[in-house]
Length: 211
Ligand SMILES: N[C@@H](CCC(=O)N[C@@H](CS)C(=O)NCC(=O)O)C(=O)O
Image (cartoon, rainbow, N blue to C red; front, top):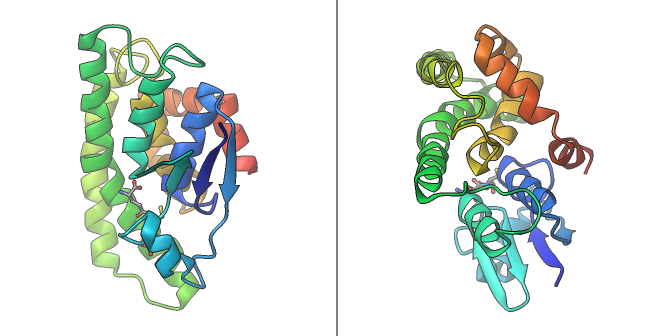
């Protein structure tokens, strides 16, 4: 069964899903959506994703949205295929889940604000709110200090194995490092920097960036 992934390949949440499918060796077809022309607000698309955001997957008759839910679904469904992304014990699974939550709740939001104000708004001719940018950078710095401490003791976030927790960080960190000029936030922290070099050099991520 080929999985249909609805969403443009430059968006963070779609890239997160694609990285997981590639790690697991699952075949997929991308259904591109023209966000500029608001295809994600089209009634036909809203039948699949009623909140009008990307991505959504169709796997036969089964439909699923929310990128992190999709990661968990495929990592569990194809547990013994491709890269093991959930850990081998319930404790490892618990720690994977912990860092997946940290990514969604603490890491992604300030980066998202930076991307909107430093990349999206300039393209639309909307002035960035520099106070908000500064506050988001401060918030992110505090989060990254915690990551630095964690990664000084553990090669990956959940332990000595690459997992969904690390994978989920790839899209936002890619924008932070290579798109909005905030690479020093990663590079100034030795262990975070080494971790980023490691996870971003995985073939799956290189493939996502080529799509
Ligand atoms: N929590 C959702 C977030 C989805 C999301 O915000 N997608 C963005 C692209 S990364 C989007 O569709 N933006 C278009 C819009 O908000 O109109 C997920 O992880 O799937």
